[in-house]
Each structure stands twice: as structure tokens, then as C-alpha cells.
Amino acid sequence: MPIQEITVWDTAVEVEQGSRNRYGGATTLERVVVRLTDDEGEEGWGEAAPLMYITQETGSEMAAALREAAPRIRGKEVDELLAALDQVADFTGLGAARTALEIAAVDLSTKTRGAPFSQVFGGHKRNAVTLDAPIGLLPPDEAVRKAEPLVEQGVRTLKVKSGVDMEADAERIVRLRERFGPDIKLRTDANGGYTPEEALRFTDRMIEIDLEHFEQPVLPTEVKCLDVFREIRARGMQVALDESLFSIDDARRLVDAEVVDVGLIKIAKFGGPRNAWEVARVFDAAGKPALLSSPYESYIAKSAGFALALSLETADRAHELAHLLDEEPYAEWRHAISGGAFTLADAAGHGAVGIPARVEKMARTAV
Image (cartoon, rainbow, N blue to C red; front, side, top):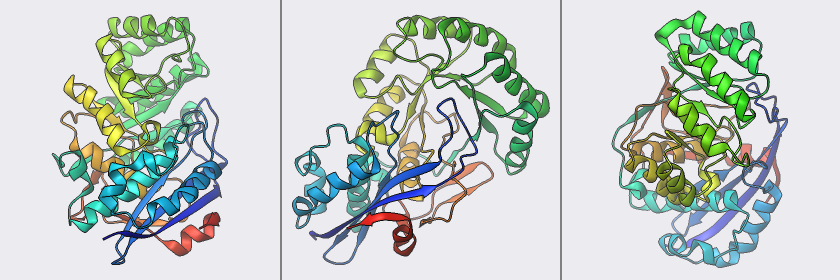
């Protein structure tokens, strides 16, 4: 069943991000949505959000590359497309564009076989994963107010942003621990905002708070970064890495160097779900958690991340797949988020579909 049509929407929406990190808060959010339609009318949906500090591309660049590739996509069998994805376009510097196309192709391929999206990762090993919720760079009392309804809804892991002001960051986390006690897990993400000295002092402050892990204490451009990660682990704090992790070679190097406990997997960083799975497997094979993160995408990309999360062997931590901005949904899904858990529905493909009229309403261009 050859692909009959590819539709690419280049979207942008004004948002007020409620979970500000050291990079700031999003005001305009770009996402590219892709729909592949075969000659029997079956659809595969894909999506990715470019993040300039991660993928170094814009939504317009993504859309242009995918539209230019359209003549080489039409007429191909979907599995033929998946086998030769890098021959339809030059995706150098366009990992998010490649991701959107691959998610759509895998979705279509598994739908035509009546199989779940996770089949491409060897099948799912569970039917649900737990979820965290984000707490941004807020004053302590505001952080507590934001967390209270989340905890009441069943969320048991809070990811608290840090990396700007060590004292204020520590106070925010201490206040959350005082309010909720041992009933919740706390983790923090500095996005590489600390100096080596600050990162170690912050670690010492946080040891008694019993953090689940300390994510990206310093940036990978810091010449002492590996020594800092080792020292933090030696002091009794687990280290998670995101900005240090962009390839399977990075994953192997960091695991072999014994500087990491948790890998953060944003599918767009690796150019698609299959590459992301190979990176996640490096952590899985070492008995370390790989956490799926999809902070800016809709149900479409989150469903692909969910499928990957379900396939992992090590599953003792909450994933970052529930962060939905306050906007009108432009996609729907069959899965469920409730009580701090993301639960699988019986669905072929990744289980999410775009709502064309709403996508078009957000689109700058659609071809």
C-alpha cells in the first residue's frame, strides 16, 4: 500500500509557559506536524518541536525540508520509506524534521499491521508508566501552591528546576520536602546552570533532602564536567544527563566513564524514535533508567515516547510525558493519564491522531 500523500503543517502558537527554567519560558512554540496517507486512506501521524538550544533548527526549516522531500516519499511503500529514510532528504542539522517523519512512518506501518507502535522496539513490557510533574523557577510558596493539586491528583514525583540561584533553588526544594514529606519523590534539573563549585555545594545541601537525582549540574562544555559528575556521585547523589547526551556514542562514553546514573531521552535529539531507542538501550543494558521526556509536543509525539518507555527493562522512575501546555488540543489519543500514571489503550500505531481543522488553525503554512 504505497504512500499517496504527505501533508506538512508548520505551526506556531503563543503560549505562557508555567514551568520556567534557566533558559527562560516559551512565548512562541513551534511544532511541525506530518500526516502520511496511503492509497487505502490509512493515516500515520508524526510531530516534533524544534528547540534551538537542542536541535538547532526552526519549524520553518523543518517544514521546508519535509516538503522538498515529498516527491521522493509519494509512491513508496511505508516500510520502504523507513528503510531508506535518509535517502529522501538531507537531515543534517534537522533531527526534529527527521523525527516527525519517522514517527508518522512508524505509526502508519504499525497501523497497517494492526500492531502497537512499541513493536518497533521489540514490544511493550508493561501497560503503564508513572509520570512526573514540573515545578519551575518559582518562589517557594508558589512552588508549593503549584504542587499541591498535582499531588492531590496522584502525582508522586516532582521535577524541580534549578541552576540560576543556588540559595533560592535550595530553598524551593527544601520547602517542597517540608510540605510533602517522604510521600513524594523530588528530582532537580539545573540545565547546566551551575559552576563546578556551585554544583558541589548544592549537592551537599541536597543530600539530606533525599533527591532522586540531580540532572545536568554543569554543561558539557565545562572542562571539569566529568570530574564534577563523578564527585557528585561519590557524595551520594545520582546524576542524570540531558545536555550531555546527543548520540549513542555519548551514551556509551558516559556509561563507560561511570559518570551517569540516568539518561534523559528526547526523541528529537536523536533524529527519531528508532535512534532514541538504541540510545535508551545503552542505559537499559547497564541497568540504568532511561527517562523519556517530551515537554513541548502534543499527544502525537508523547504517544511515541510513551511506546518507547513501555519497551524498557528498567522502569523504576517516572517519565516526563505529561507536560501539556494550556492550549486547545490539536490532537487526540486513546491512552489515559490519571493518578500520576500513563496507561496504554488497545490501539494500533501510537494511538494518537491529529485534528486537521485545529492543526490548520495553528498553521503558518500547510502543504
